[in-house]
Image (cartoon, rainbow, N blue to C red; front, side, top):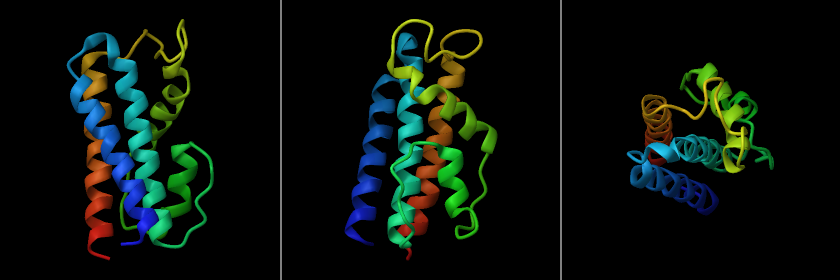
Length: 131
């Protein structure tokens, strides 16, 4: 695996490790969403680096997935990517930002974000390790 791809995957794993530490802290559910988004973004960028695809300096998961969708034999829930995109930037700022329509993500929603990010990471990591 290329050095840049390994670095992106390590960074993605670091985001999963952060989620693992905070997943049971109810008031940090918005930060779970942020780190889930970051994990997926970095995982997609690892795949791009490994496959010599221009790695843009953007954060939009739907756009990033669109760049690799025809190359990787992986499907994903685009609605979930859109949800995480919507929470990504706002999750880092105080006030009403970073919230879902009903407020901060619930613990169940946070768990769903974590599981989704972890599945994507593990699928791509396995794919990259075998290349």
